[in-house]
Image (cartoon, rainbow, N blue to C red; front, top):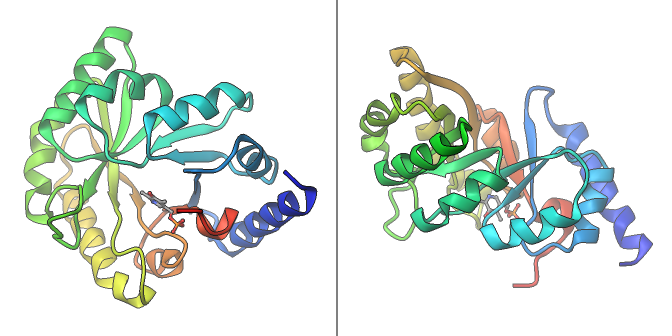
Length: 225
Ligand SMILES: *Cc1c(COP(=O)(O)O)cnc(C)c1O
């Protein structure tokens, strides 16, 4: 890994960090990045790493000694929960009762309480993961009593490409649900984090209320896939 590239990563991160309001957390979406790239990002001040796949997170985590936070940002299958609860400090992609029950069951064994965000399919796209906007409250009402899960907010993807303005309605819908749930003051449910926005849309997401942004390309450069 050449030094020039490391410096580019560091510069990118500084630029983005400087442009974010203080209360907004930056998750480095690190899929496909090498250990060196991830280490460079940590040197530049990244405190939260986001991963989409268990196996990749596991491999990279072995090489990282720094105390950073690990967020699961990809779709989580029930049969991967056992590893996920060991690897991650937060699961941003909770989207079913079945998954919630499995996380709760396995966390109970180790006494760990897992912070989770409920993932919303804000575009109601059939090929996307996440729960439909109309089903969110019902899901939360069904899982708020699981003692080893701590609901801390919502997450959404929205469209990844195209005009970033096109993502705004998706973010707005998610923020509306966030405020709606917050007003209900459901026991054991905290509406604290709203995770939305990626490289092309994070600025818009912040104006719509995001306080977690997940950024890959703008930190590390274009991915090779
Ligand atoms: C890859 C990814 C991101 C970041 O995407 P970029 O366009 O590279 O910034 C954010 N969130 C999720 C869930 C991702 O998979």
